[in-house]
Image (tube, rainbow, N blue to C red):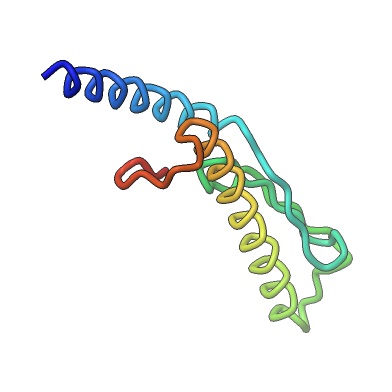
Length: 104
């Protein structure tokens, strides 16, 4: 019975750490770019776009598809980097173990 109590205490502690981590991830950001820096995106650790910057030189009304592709590429790269950041931070708490239900 004491073993179960210890496990429950540890699970509660980890849950508290995860809640703190989620708050912390809101303040951490990663930057991604495409088109040689013509499109830049800043994504936080909760996979939200914080900012998107587009250099005016890349805006060509006759080639909107290229701009759309550059934006999509930058956003996708930003989300990928943000996911890596979140996984690395979570690994610090879980010791690298993948615990079901404890994902971000």
